[in-house]
Length: 141
Ligand SMILES: [Zn+2]
Image (cartoon, rainbow, N blue to C red; front, side, top):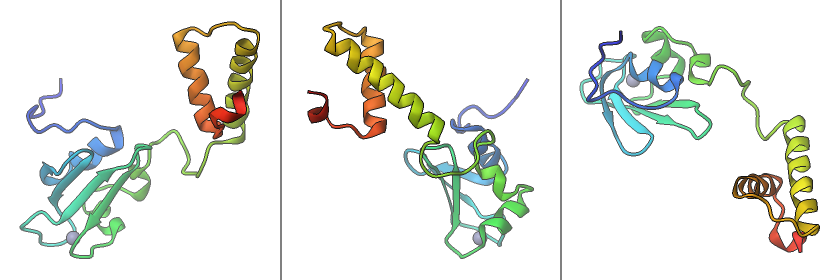
């Protein structure tokens, strides 16, 4: 059983919870943003900003100028604890992901060209693939 104080429990990725759970005076500072006391210097007013990026990565910044790794060391974490565990940090989708999106897109397109209507689910997935591939509507007509 986890008897945490439910009122201030943050919701977010495992990374985020790991970080916030070790900080003092954690306060929400808007959507996906928190403030807390910096563990790496003698911080009275919360000067540490914590932000969760869209990919689940956690960003911490001390306005007093502490290094991220010092902040993490003070709470027993490492830089890699800020990154979602299962994915290596990389920019852009992998080649396999692009191939997959292209396949989804081509199947959807072929269905439409044959005059078949896609189910709402398939349509949504098709639109997503289109978006991910950066295909504009003009090209599908
Ligand atoms: Zn600091």
